[in-house]
Length: 347
Image 1: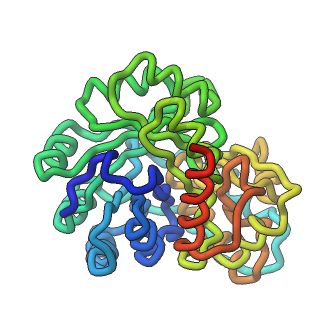
Image 2: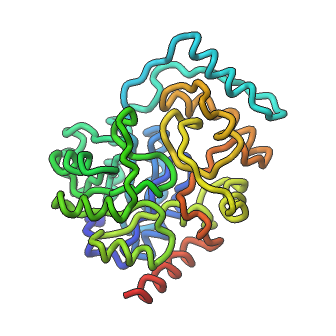
């Protein structure tokens, strides 16, 4: 295993972990081989599949690999009446295709300890967590193997909590970021802090190294956040249009060709706040009853699959950050090269 240290990075870039098949062994290994950190979002992945994916990736690279997990909170199905209303809201959408909507049964997500066990067998350099802090046992066991632990923070309170549990670094997620908001408790008021302001606040109040995430698309953006004090920049949306990414054809089309659209934060797809390109589903589900996270994610899966198969982007989660209009249609190697050149231009 390659023991991680920020000083070992040839490029201060972490390819963001994105659950849902966006990350592939090919993408992660190219980023790692190019001097950055390749990542996987394993939140909805079985322990067996995690083992398989990391095993493949380890054969493609000896570089730094990060495995990321959501910290799910206990959840229950809503009352029958609310279930029916939430299902009806989806069924009433104007999509001319048949699909089954099934309410899942417990467990609603994989056991985190089992996922971590499968991950530790493959010794990635880093394991990160999103939406909260895992158990101290998981943190300590991971670190005992020489694996670094990072946890997402969206505000100062979360950052201090991460420092207090002995994590190795913080991922500061600005409001500009695509995908799920990392706020620990979405019932709390989201401070919606912009990345640069969040970085400054965390660096002033916490002694841990900080990675910057949110709206970073170009080398000059990476230079900006490292000048503020970040050890590295985490880029997700920038990699979605790479040849090696597992992004669907229709999702790539919207990223590259629907750039007049804005992004919007919505609970409609998963039951938890996440940023994506605004589309018909987000608009029509506004104010409607939905299932709690991650049950809503399971309930909307059949609709999203049908929509994707029909090359209809109006009913799928088009996760993207606010600066998605800066995406580039390149291979991961070409993108890393371009980012490197831009970064050095701004030194």
